[in-house]
Amino acid sequence: LAKTTQPISMDSYEGQEVNITCSHNNIATNDYITWYQQFPSQGPRFIIQGYKTKVTNEVASLFIPADRKSSTLSLPRVSLSDTAVYYCLVGDNTIGYSTLTFGKGTMLLVSP
Amino acid sequence: EPEVTQTPSHQVTQMGQEVILRCVPISNHLYFYWYRQILGQKVEFLVSFYNNEISEKSEIFDDQFSVERPDGSNFTLKIRSTKLEDSAMYFCASSEDNRQEWSYEQYFGPGTRLTVT
Picture 1 (cartoon, rainbow over the protein chains, first blue to last red):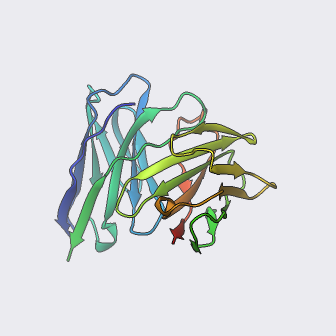
Picture 2 (cartoon, each protein chain N blue to C red):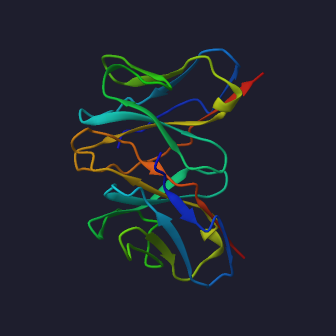
Picture 3 (cartoon, each protein chain N blue to C red):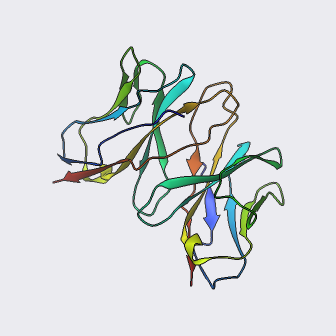
């Protein structure tokens, strides 16, 4: 299982774009990159996943360079409600389900 | 939007007692999971369940833990003889069969806070 490294915390202000980078130097060929969000006292919530290049949905964008050794979650124009812990996960998805291995994540604090 | 539900939201029990945590996964999902999160720590995988049997379990999921899908809707986690260190938030999750679309999307419930005294 590829180990991930991400900043422990980040600060931002409302309306700014936030980029959270995750390192996963040992990522394997079959591994996908997934990001989850967790608010205090709630279960994690899936944000986005990707394999390579760029993926965008209504919530965020995920940028993955060609070597796939890192990835960047981009949150456009954050609001106070985006204050949460963001987790980068890397793993294999060849057997029909995925066991999620969470790290410590990045605590994002958005201020007015 | 369909969601995973869990009951109770908070359970207080004495050390050595048995507890059963209940979950209702999303109805068309095939895979079910339990995770736990000790206060201030990481979310930890406990067990996954498919086709009425355990698919995978972690080292945490020892003989004091068991899971069951007693009917078509509920998914339960039983802790036989609770210890102080079992105090945590327990999350149930479910997912579709993702072999077709390579999805890591699991849907988590709101959690049950277990306090062992």
